[in-house]
Amino acid sequence: MYKHVALLVRKDGMSHEEFVDYWQENHTPIAREIEGVVRYQQVLPTEPDHAEFDGLAELYFEDLEALHDALGSEGSRDYDPEKGKAKEAREDVDNFLAIEERPRFIGEEIVQKDEIDGDSVERSSTSNRTKSGDTDGLYKHSAFLVRQDGMSHEEFVDYWQENHTPIAREIEGVVKYNTVLPTDPENAEFDGVAELYFEDLEKLYDALGSEGSRDYDPEKGKAKEAREDVDNFLAIDERPRFIGRERLVKAAE
Image (cartoon, rainbow, N blue to C red; front, side, top):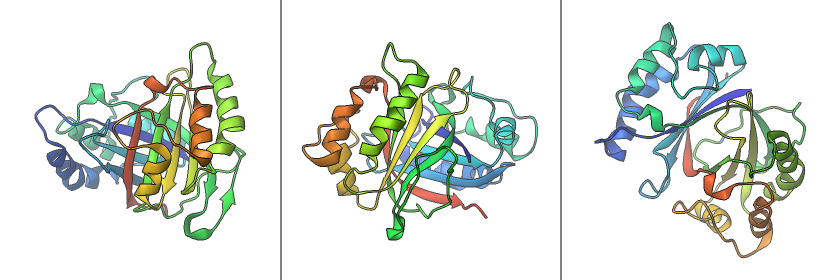
């Protein structure tokens, strides 16, 4: 399944609370009806005062062409759909978003681990795609990954998938772990997205730190091992991250 992730930044002069109110009450009813959208989820920050963004909007499509038609291609933060709810939604974002400050990412999601409700499923092949598991209400750490200087995107993906993922999916408290690979790496703003889900916010903070820093220093277990390993392939200071609670707006039928 293909996924469009928008990292939302509110307009100047608008409080976070005003932003959320407009997003939820005015924009969401439009966005959920965008042509081709089969699943729509939002992530609200657990600590808005320390978060790098005001929220994440994640729209899923079965077909990449439908995604591009509705939301543009990889090369621009802006886009200009010509018809339907996509056009209406694009016009509405000017009412509450700072478009030029809003990174976005288009990719294909791979479920690497799923133990929600104790149902354990592990996947390491790109032939196994997203399942519509119930992540509503879970706490989620999204890391927007940037590779180290001197490393190609292909080298980055190989290390991430083969070396780092087996560690990260065993971090204490993680009940679901997704990796998202860009559909157009040359034009993508990031080399990938790592999504780790927790049922307990304290476990998330213990493993991956709180909102106030892109870096963190866990003291034990797989979290410590994973933190040490990221120095082998990530540019930490260039890697935005977001901690929030997921809200399901539209479920896949």
